[in-house]
Every structure is written in C-alpha cells, then in structure tokens.
Amino acid sequence: MTIILSVEKAREKIMTQSMIPIDVRIKDEVYGTGKEVYKHQHLPGAVYLDFKEDISGKDSFFPEIEQIKATLEEKGIHRQTPILLYDEGNHRAASKAYVLFTYLGHDEVYILNGGAQAWGEAGYEWTDEVIERDKTIFDVQLQQDMLVQIDEVKAQLEDETSVHIDARSYEKYSGEAPSGYGKDGHIKGAQNFPAKNVVDANGRWKSATSLQGQFASVKEKQEHIVSCGTGNSACINVVALKEAGFKNVKLYAGGFKEWSQDDQNEIEKES
Image (cartoon, rainbow, N blue to C red; front, side, top):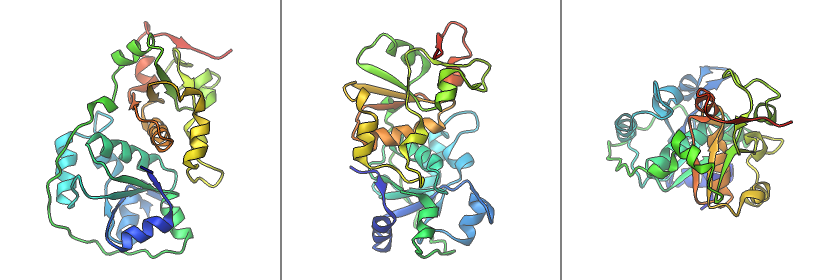
C-alpha cells in the first residue's frame, strides 16, 4: 500500500469524503502557530492535532495512549477512517503522526506529498469551516513490535539479520559535527541514511522505486531499526522504508541521545 499521495489524488478522495485530512502543522509564516493557521485556512474537512499536545507526550516520545484515544474519539476518528496527514511540507510532523497512528493499529494512513505547501501551489481551495463530527470509538490495537527499547538495540548488535539505520546527517553520524548530547559519533554498527535524502530538491517524497534503490544495500536484512537523535527524523526514514516496501521496520525513539548517556555503550566515529 502506498503511503504518499499526490495533491491531485488526495483532493479527489477528500472531495468524495472518503478520507479525512488531519492537519499537524507546527508553525506558519503568516499566522505563527499551526493551531492558529488552522483556524484561518485548512484543507476541506480537516481536523487539527497539535504536535506537542496531541502527537507527543510531556515526558515521552508519544502521548499517553488513553489521551490520544480520547482526542481521536472526540474528533470523530476511528480506526477504519482513512486519514490524510499533512504538515507545512517538511514532512517531519506528518511522519511522526504516521508512526503514531500505525502504532495505534490504524491501517489506512496516508501522507500528503508536499504538505500544505503543495496544496497551495496547486491552487486548491482552503476553508476555515470546522466540521463537527459525531463522537466515535477508536479501537486501539497497539503494534508493540514497532517500537524498540535500548536493550533490544544492544541485542541487535549481534544479529546479522538486523540492521540499524541512523537518520541523522552524515556530519553528526560520523562525529565531525557535535551531536548536542555530550558525545559524538553513532551507535555501534549503525549505517547512515540521512532522512533529508528521501525527498527531492523540491521537498517532495521520492518515488517508491527511487527509495528502493536508495536502501538497496540493506534490502536483504530481515529487520530494520531506525533512530536519529531523539526520534523525529527517524520517523521520516520509517515512512520512506515502508513506502519502499520494507515490512519489518522499527523505531528506536531513544536514539543517540539515550545511547550516549551510558559510558558502557559503544560509540563509533568515521575516520
């Protein structure tokens, strides 16, 4: 199943009411915040989820399950509702929201290629109308295997069927640039696939075929664990890998920040 939808295909589904857009924009040049720009203009039928309050937890990568469940039910979204995620166009918030929804067990989650920027450039209509939907039930079916903890990352070091993918820039991965966490370099054995490389010069997602070629060197691995510094950029690579057809893709949200806090964990640098 493709994840990335063009604005043309997305609009067709939105206009036939076969898909609900979810606005996860964080900021806007004109209105300041994502929440404020949503009040003035959003895709027809869209609901809004706040990146910090709804998609992230106060002290955790994801929000409390009961909290996001209640939020989605209040907005009339259930697990069988096809949804379209869109952000400003950098795909960071939409990718994290995608990982969250799939973790909750949602099967029909899509991302608008190019986000709000692409929608605007296509000349499609905006609205300030907020549709009130009937409250529903979101039947959470947690996909626990999607998330890995630090002990599982350590075990993966000895597993030749598994690969660890670092989504940070090469400069941070190699140790040439400071990580921001006190130690520099990368988790032992990790391979570098910067998240910025999964989009083209216009900021649009590359095709599934192009992404398959990009990750060709790790296609034979049975498990793909993705991390970055604290999880957000890694979500972009999770989406890219799944769009390329990889099945067993997992997120290590703790990332290099958590890994580097323990002196016993091995850190490598590129010479």
